Image (cartoon, rainbow over all chains, first blue to last red):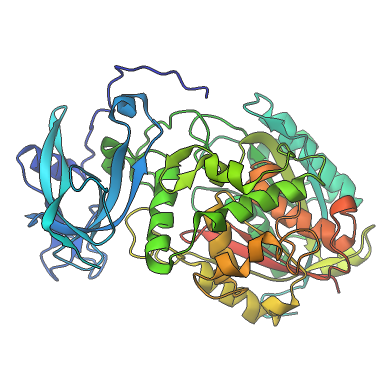
Length: 147
Length: 387
């Protein structure tokens, strides 16, 4: 391995682009926000410039319930960035949000049963401080595995 | 004339030397591959009137640098293809369109690879830098510890196992097969045999993705010469015609998509079979992208060699795809073992096999081959035929 192991290295800072600033600022206020089209009601993540369904420019960051299910996940065992070396192993997941079929977001799964996460597991959002902002992560909830 | 225009052939191919690890010499290596391909075709640089290449983003030589290096003639058709494309095959696909349409007569397509930070398709030890505007949406995934393509492929593998079941050994057979063929290929960087035990014991990077599911990063280059079938008949090698070429994307989403399994690959396959009039049963060998073992399994299924989710059983413990098997697969060792030349090497090898020039790894009586490159969100392929 040619990478330099730096145990106390910082995680990469969140430097929001104009398109995604609402997402990170919302998370810092414990809100999971997703762009919703004012014209047709379609939710989009990542945030688009226009609604990809009706091409409207009128989009509004909208608070989500924070409920979802695990669509897929991986347990990361290798540090792809030195800032995450101390966190290994950790779970990266694609979570399907409850509001709309196919509305997916990359996140982390925290806590949950000892045997680990499973696809179809119900999860709920919580917020972890991250630099000047926060990151929305998801924790398995008691209702168990929906397959 | 077919619907796409003039009939087209691959008249030459060439490789540079292939090096483990980083090299400052990517321009020299790329030039070597281009010179070798032009010589292989029995042509001179002045005969080249089209150049196409693919790169991820400013990491490799561009068309203009090869034009200057080789002193080709004026270029009637040319393009650097960057980012969105069927990886290393993208330049060759564009070359086929240019020659078929009459935009140019003889095109050079190349892929120069330099193993470096940010070269994310492999198990590179380098951390991947953040960059805005990538198809991976770095700004929205890096704070969750997702970097490069490996965790994204692991998400796809996990989803595949949820939908279809399957065993880790299914992937292992692809990795083992690569080494079996590589043992017959002097250019390959990983030629020692691999056992299933060693595959299963290789380091877990992102469950369920192991180190030996990843291709081997190298510095090196590959190039091909595309010209009309008519002109190819006058050149020095047996003709290898491009019977069909195709691309597809599905919805194009690498990270947040609803179809993590196949993307555009089945549509790409459908176009290849429809346009060529051939079927999977006609194929004597296949060169299917193996940047990750997972991708090779999805291509076998998308192309219809077996049903969706059935490649594990179909492989028959690897016998189906090895030397002497019914569908010899990735006969150089592919990117897993020859080294990561980003898929253009699959086209070069298919041509080599159909000419009958593959030496120790030659597939007997090979007349038809399929090449498929990259994965669902941006993929492409070709069917090759020895007339």
